[in-house]
Image (tube, rainbow, N blue to C red; front, side):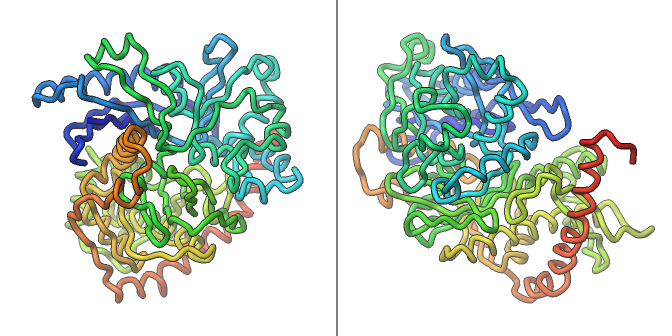
Length: 501
């Protein structure tokens, strides 16, 4: 048996995978985000670790209740939220809360990185505040005494690895999101590290996602009644989610509806296409790359909408929206609650309802939120297609998959079939478990080791609705962003200067 651990933004999930490829058990433990200042987003790595212990304790209890022996577990794979800056001193102590992927404080540092010669050639990406490198430049500038004490910089899942096995290791799929990786060579770039005042000695060593990086500490093995258990390198959450859904070959694509919204397409080699903020990263499998669009707020918009509307839960909110007729005069919603990446790369982008009238109902606003996220995803998918990705049917994963109503709406907006597979709600953890199996079994063909999970449902688009979205909803959606972007930048500049409005 194999364990996959996924360190998400809102929870740690752990799954147990049998040798037959079947999911045997799953468990999770919640996490919270700290926002001590506007545009800041942080978490305490100790909270990650305690949630991991809680999820693993629960998973092992479930396994025993099902008659499964923890001693039969062979390896553990890791997945996690990307880009988070976790800084340790020479004694392995965390120096400050981790700065997360959706933190927007380091906009000025991005411009500094873009000035590095051959930056985009090396990294294959634009410099964005969410990535790791500008966060370290920010620390260097604003917390210099702390920066001087940094001995290691780890990504979130790799901090869990350090606590599990004592090893400092990462993998190319996660490291590609730091802006310190030469993505084509799948190795650290001394030039990019030097631009941030760092060197290779402060980085974890790199291992492909399906390789063993160490072994579980003895005290943890005893806690969970395990034997000698290998730890696999694993992957960033999106790459691991793709492995979990069998998205491992060029032409395959995946849509992840989590806190963020991610469209992931396997590419035929390394292709750098940063002009529209399309990410070009390493996949979690050797000699494989992918293109990716990212919107910072997807299913998280539903959580916020439920709170705004006074709904008891997202589920009840969606039930009410599904039961209410969709008005042609419903409002528009811009889902840019935390800025945006693809295709705008705009940390100042803000959310908006437009078109409210005295007759607007709560359900109309929910419809607008669901559509707004879908139209943002469509922008990202079109950017990836422009970058040269060949896209067929799209596998969909994440918490947003629990609503068939929303999935059908998304299929209509995107104009493509959406395939719902078993395990989609734990996709990254499932992918981590698959990588754990590959790590101990050797170089098995990824197409064999990572099959598509059982197909549960296909949501075919209604092309008449798709054309209606393209003709009536998408143009206004795009025009609203275009008209408001300059206004928001002026407002942000006034905030930064301390001038009164």
